[in-house]
Length: 195
Image 1: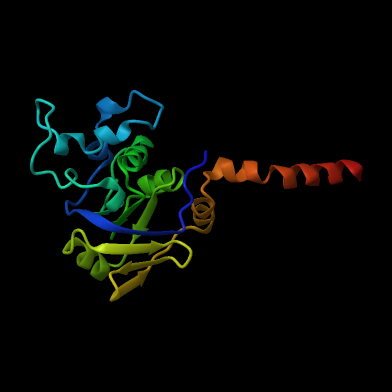
Image 2 (image 1 turned 90 degrees about the horizontal axis):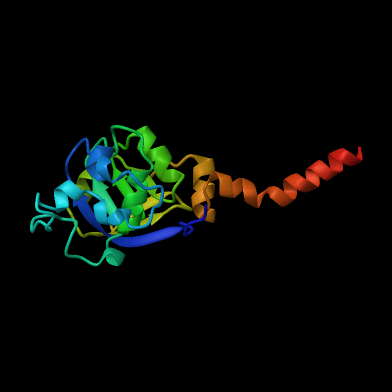
């Protein structure tokens, strides 16, 4: 699978300060009836965004903005906990997010996100607190240098597993990376057959 390569992203942030946001809150189980990513963004945080009649709530921080200007979600600690579901990063990406930043991101969610083109960024607590208290701040995430910059004054580093980082920079999932290596693999196999 291919997606837009992730090198550097400058965007404003949306802040969800809640701790322990689980995958069922990100996308409720009743929306997991599809294997397509398209349209899942409409259901992201559905129970937080819509009332029981299916109408948008007026108090949701996720509505009333241009998604192209708010591509970074800043969330409380232990983001993405709960059951493993690829639909969670699919829905966040389809909604318009390209990165999720927190002080702590659940391992299973992190793995699913990295394989699906959504960058999970774990930052130190001081940086996280700065981001939490400045919703709408302009933030730059540079995957090449593995840095997060808030405005012009604050910068910190983050870690991403090397193979996942390479895949994101190239805009491919792990299988896509292997497919790109096919000519090299085939050449190696031909050389082996000639021995």
